[in-house]
Structure formats: structure tokens, C-alpha cells
Image 1: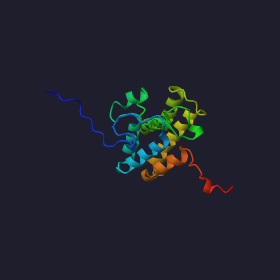
Image 2: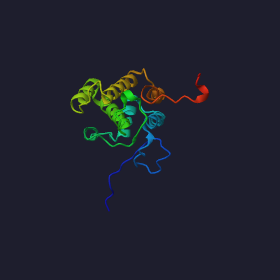
Image 3: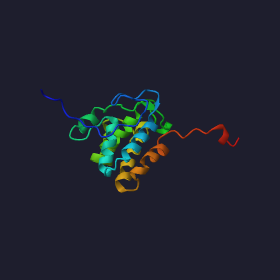
Image 4: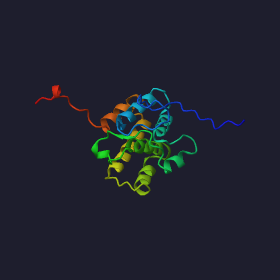
Length: 176
């Protein structure tokens, strides 16, 4: 009997609401927070920076190995569906986590300049659009991690501070 292809997934994005590995996240989740949580989980595995960035692409359904090009070109898979991104990088869809992680996966392989050209000319995301700004953030994320200016251990907080909605202020902390 012939066995199917062997596929080992060393990590899955953190989401206690998703009991079945590989199942899509629910639509109404805070996808930005889930992306940050996934990055926290991934950072704990201790991969070298290049692999860390490529593994982050798996959040967007971009595999490692030779098929990454196909996955990236077809848009990957929207494994973290939802909202939660700041308005300046939110295009009112449930796919911004996929967009960010997929852009990271591409930039980690081909560099920031080519990735910017691809997002502008192939995806048709002008730099002044929400998707264009999110692509720029992903390219900057890759640059910072590769240069050592952003440690993997701090990467999730970078996402939370730069991309996610600011935490809501409680009535008790409101000075009014």
C-alpha cells in the first residue's frame, strides 16, 4: 500500500477557539492579535531569522520549499480570518493577516525592492492604499528582523504596536 505525501507541520498558529488543526479561523476573531500570538509561538521555537520569516509565511498558507512561489502567486490560504488591524492598514476585508504574512514570506526570499514592485505592479496595491501600507510594514518587518534590529522575541509586540488596533481604554483609566 502506498502512503500519501508526508507533511510535517512543526507549529500551528495559536488559537484555542480552533480545535481542529488546519481548519480556518472564525470570521469574527481579532486576526491581528492572532497573528501576533502566532508570531510569539513561532519565536519560541528558536529558528534562525531567515527560517523564522519563511515559517511566518505558513500563516498565510505559503509553504516552505520550491512550491512557495505557487502559493504566493495564488494568494496562499487565509488561515487567520478576521479584523483587528489599524484603519491605515485595514482594507475592510478579513484577509490582512494573510496579506502581511504572505508579503513577509516573499520579502524574506526575494528582498524588499522586488517585493514592493510585485505588490504594486502585480497585486496592484498602490503604496498609498491600506494594502500598500501593510506591504510596506511587512517589508520593514523583514528588514528589521534580518538586520537584528528586531529580535524574534519582540516581533509580536512590534505587530501589536504597529498594526493592531490600540487597546481600548477602560472607563476607570479615562481622565475625564
